[in-house]
Image (tube, rainbow, N blue to C red; front, side, top):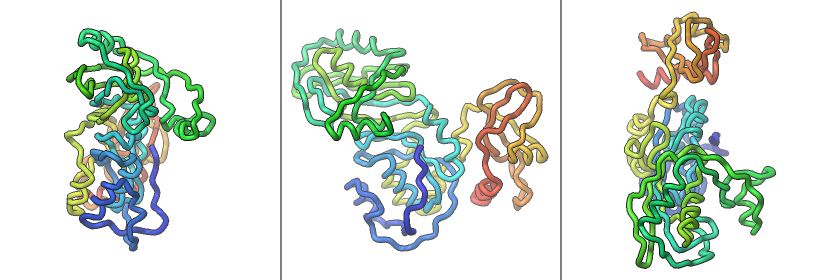
Length: 353
């Protein structure tokens, strides 16, 4: 997850057609005219449907701009040529973004058979063209081979680093370096459609996989196993962890929304802690927990715990328990993990009023 601090100088939100035009060209908002605007603390999770042609960081910067947020980051990157679910974290939510770097993902992809490219996707140069002579039965048999635990060699056109340098930087210089194979898991590989003849033979797949899976490599390896080679012509992430595409908003829709509507799209910070066991503390224990002090109690050992407690005394009205942070329990102790600050809790409460 990359944290995105405020750029040099403050910028005003772009209006109407400006953001749309920049989105279409894939340009950074920093190229737009600048005027001063007051940034503000914003806390929560925005589920963005990343558009084609933008990097994850460009999409993040546009959303951050529209929300006038002080601090933001994303939960793992999507290639510029990929679209789909990109959870963006704002404020206190950035403390828990690592959880979703580790989440399982689901993609829909089209593997163009018969052509191998330099990048394993449609952006690269076609290196080799071969006839497609496989049968539907062979396709099914090959796909079955890629189910379950497999090993992948990361592609040269990836952000993975070797000796402090991203692999894609070596690739741009025409170099190929040794890469160790990685263990990943393909939980499900569903054949949605296939076309084995004509000008564009292809497979339409849905892939449910573990973190760290390179779908470009998977598509290329499937093409090689079929004897004809292949590359990705489309890639869309339709789910990550508990979030799916039906919950997402596009940049265009976010741009068209009012400021209040944009803020209303934010999910609470604790959305990132779905699947954690919940512990609620009283006022005294909550205060000590927020200071990083372990608490004792009759808790079973748990590796993932979301901790709640009463709102600070400064809250204007009685509030339900608020998120204090994450923890784990061991030997009857509640051991603090990532904690919200009292000011962050107060800002979240004030926004909710």
